[in-house]
Length: 230
Ligand code: AMP
Image 1 (spheres, helix red, strand yellow):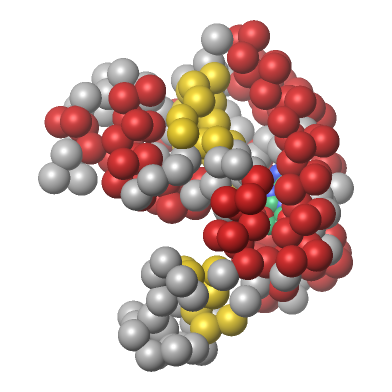
Image 2: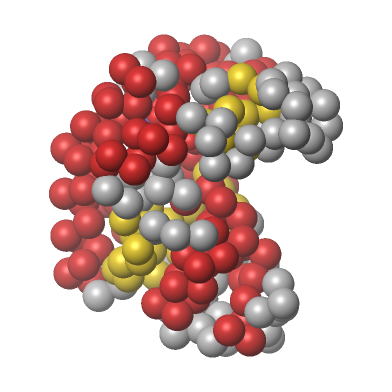
């Protein structure tokens, strides 16, 4: 993807959507285009869990069951990465904030530094989310993502990229997926009104090919194809 002069591009963004909407995939593409750090709260928690830190041990019981990790732990972990003056280098927050408490904590922080430019919502219907998540397999070594039907590996159970074992995420089990969608509908979705009122919310249809969704996303932010183009 190409780049334009920094300064004319949005620098501080939030990407939201239900589990399985494709936030991580789109966030990776966008951070390349905008040249800002990708801060994914779920990835930060998984990193802590794999290292066995006290924070990771505490978070894992919530994560495995599809529940939100308590707000104080989550906000401290995320905000320390982007608080002023770090906000000057920009950020793309992926999966944070997920409720009004977290949104308020981010607003309070932004009031001491620079404002958020856009809040992007990727919308996908519930039945499509369940189909996507229940077929998702992740490489235990390099984290590459596959889908048993729509993006299978060449050899079943093996990562094409590094040969690692493919695993199902604990929270992609059907019971946990149902909880995650319920938590999203009850806690995260109501928070969207807050961003709609601020005039920063842009909604993008998350159905279709990855590059189609990426194009919609750039358009929604009034960025032409030259920004994300080949
Ligand atoms: P994700 O990869 O974004 O689906 O996040 C995986 C899990 O990490 C979630 O199901 C939660 O248990 C936890 N998590 C990630 N982000 C947050 C957040 N903003 N607030 C609370 N828990 C979170």
